[in-house]
Image (cartoon, rainbow, N blue to C red; front, side, top):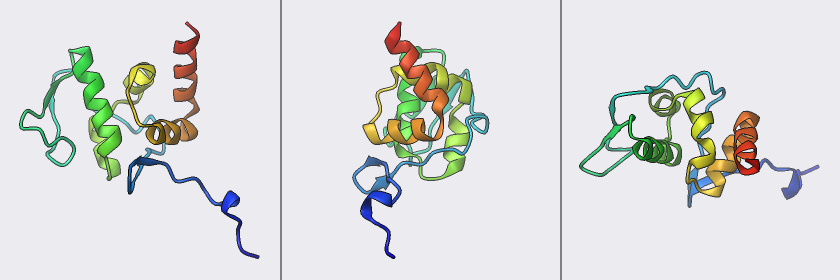
Length: 119
């Protein structure tokens, strides 16, 4: 018996034709938490690719770009830090598909966002 469309897994998109990549665990995200980070051209095509993680807005901006553009798990692991991402999650400006995919896999993110909205 063929599967019905409602039974098929939901594919979340970062943008048209770009599926969201989600890490298996937040613990595997062991990227930097301070200093300057230069994203590869594939993740950020601006000539100024360095992000000062000590500046809150730059930290947010880097996370938003990596979460939208990553297509390989090592890109997530190398640039994101699990506990930092949980802390920043409510502030990140992300496409709905990115937020939904990550929250579906990692309930801690959904709870972090709900806690921030209730405060």
